[in-house]
Length: 228
Image 1 (cartoon, one colour):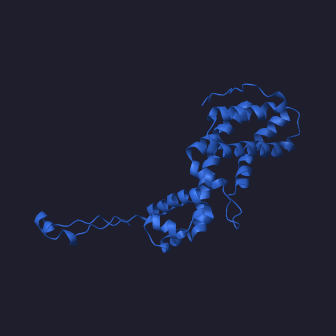
Image 2 (tube, one colour; image 1 turned 180 degrees about the vertical axis):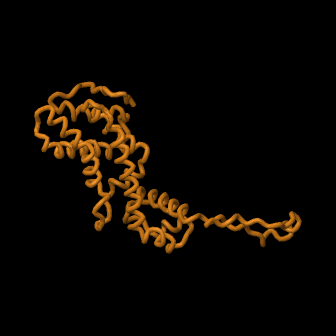
Image 3 (cartoon, rainbow, N blue to C red; image 1 turned 120 degrees about the vertical axis):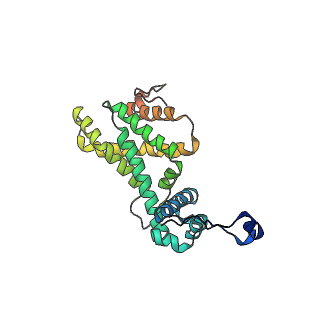
């Protein structure tokens, strides 16, 4: 329910006589609006201070509410953190999955690299949360589980490519983990460095994954439509 902003029928002369006794009531948030506000505040604090460094007291204070309001919506800090992490995981997985549209394996690598780097660039706070240590009791939402989930998205693609080239498709999960892990850890470093430029980082990642150390190109190039 939304409380209406206070209005009164007092004349200007009446208001001028007693300015200190007239106060407009604040507009109250709906439950959905309050939940989103707490999620936004929690996301910012978790990215800046980590899970352990963030308290329910600080979340409540920034939202201008009492601690019970946070507990009412999320059951505590752990519940709020779990929702924040789940949203970020789904955002990143959706970006990776929707990016994998090319037919050529090398361009698929480019698309996967760009998808992660795009996410880091656009949702930096979200990525900071994902790569931080999660609560001990939480089995999902860790950086390792994130890598595993994304690797699963490309595992089938690698399996088909291995089969077509006469390699053992049973090894596809191993290579999927290796490739995604390489990109994800490089992305973690690039999140703070931001140099070289995103397209150049993607080109070098694909260069290593595609050619291997023995056949590295001195000036790696991108073959897909993405150039920046």
